[in-house]
Image (cartoon, rainbow, N blue to C red; front, top):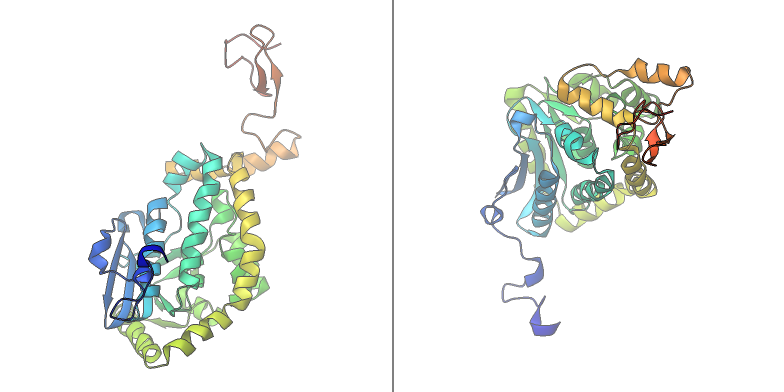
Length: 331
């Protein structure tokens, strides 16, 4: 390479893939540490129940890349700060304020999200999900992207897509049937009910359930067993076991990315996410009633069919009585 870039330094490691000390990254939304063969990545947004923003996902991706490159890391532990939540998915406030206004940017966001999921699955090291509380939405998708999961007995797991105006196609629709079977997956996806930790253990969604006080000990015991195995064999075992998840993921996530971006222009995410921010129940049946009565349920104020005779404006929503441009009464 020009200028010697990528050549192995005296220590035997290629310069282009050098890991860095955790403090060198100056992360804002996550805590990152490395000690005694274990890297820890903690979503540090407890006031938001460890939901992730666009910036959080970018930091997580970078941390997983660093852990992947560090030969002094054998296992990665992913968790959330505090004891109330592991991760509750994407920050709905950010969705409502940013992406419902610019759906084209949600396509870009989904690229960042899928990249973070890929960073977990492809880091070459076993990743343990330390489930210390609520695991919801994209949080459960990150849980399933991990290789193993240890849950505190107070943890609950759920999907929330159909509850907030989205589709859990960032891993849940693809991987829940693999983890827990088709019928149970449909129940989680359609009802959005909480699954207690013990039930999640019975279903195969987690590996172990322990009292909250014993969570760190249980995670460390599992990590130590992995550390005392050969690293290359472990890495390739992970790659092989990923096969069915990789197959379902790569066959669908691109479609999901485009559909979800287009869907962000519709009333369902607007109502679901606005209701979440306003702390009220979404008006599910009102939207159903509109469709049942033959009115539009795909547009907030009806399809763009009207025109203004006064100013010539076109594409005015069907349910408007006045022109939004000049204020004239519509015929």
